[in-house]
Amino acid sequence: RGITSEMYRTIGPPPTRIVLGFSQLGTESSWRMANTASIQSAAEEAGITLLMENAEQSQEKQFEAIRSFIRQKVDIIAIAPVVQSGWEPILQEVKQAGIPVVIIDRAVDVKDNALYVTFIGSDFFEEGVKAGKYLLDKLRNQPGPVRIAELQGTKGSTPSIDRGEGFRSVIKERPDLKITQSDPADFTEHQGYAVMKKLLEVPKQEQPSVLFAHNDDMAIGAVRAIEEAGLQPGEDMIIISIDGTRKAFEQMVEGKINAVVECNPLLGPLLMQAAKEIMAGRTLPKRMVPQEDIFTKEMAGDELARRKF
Ligand code: AHR
Image (cartoon, rainbow, N blue to C red; front, side, top):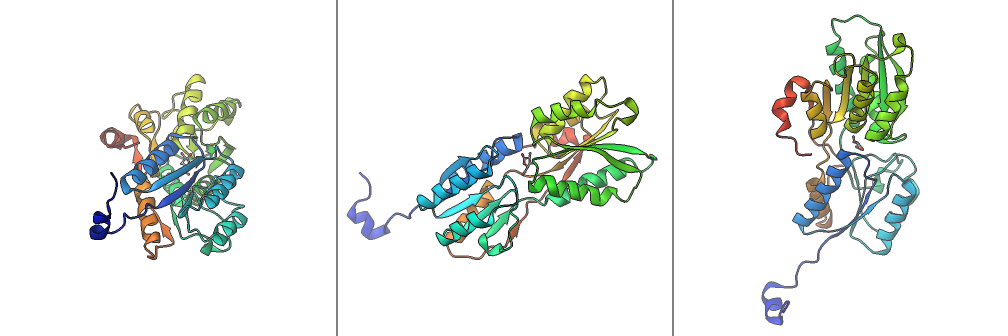
């Protein structure tokens, strides 16, 4: 029967729901699936109408989604950007339309930071630093030379750029540790497997004894390639990755991955809170970083039961 005029007089009009347009960059990894699920369930819980578009790794598709959100006159636009460059013009269009923007997960590289209200996401440089520190500690009694292979994420994406830089900033302390192979594998398990397989096609003396993978999915793919090459991952090769998915924890328990740096995908509640604050006219911090840790295989068993994604 809906709202009667009597109800209207006593409780006032029903509050209008916030409409949030969200351009998600893709479905490449377990992290991404957990991130999408977190945003969907947090929107439902917060009573926010979520219009979500999956860009399937295409920045062009992200632009199309954003333009469609402008046409639909959404209240807020959230963007998880696939790469960090090229955002200035589209963000100017959103500004012209008077719609506030929240950047989530990966960063945008823009001259004018006023083009977005806040950036909610991990400190990827710090994640690379944690991975590097783990390696230095692990090799503290082992003289070099040590050959390191790196599986990068998507080219031009903030996590790939910053994790690589953070890692290098630490390992440069030991000139006998060298990244001898480094290739992108798009943050997917399937590419992680294919690229690692290729990296292992070198003479034995040129093979790496360390793998730094920019995410768990690539590390898991690589583990398969390493095993197929007759090597024991975690023993013959030290494996470090980033994210902290349940699957990676299971492989840590089995001793196949040595350490995982956490990257938290459960950003939905923070995003919904930010949307509400923005609509209420409150000021938000320009940067919000979730708390994150590093786990080694010794800690993995205890932590496994607590993993949420
Ligand atoms: O941007 C976050 C990264 O993107 C995660 O580490 C990775 O798994 C994902 O695909």
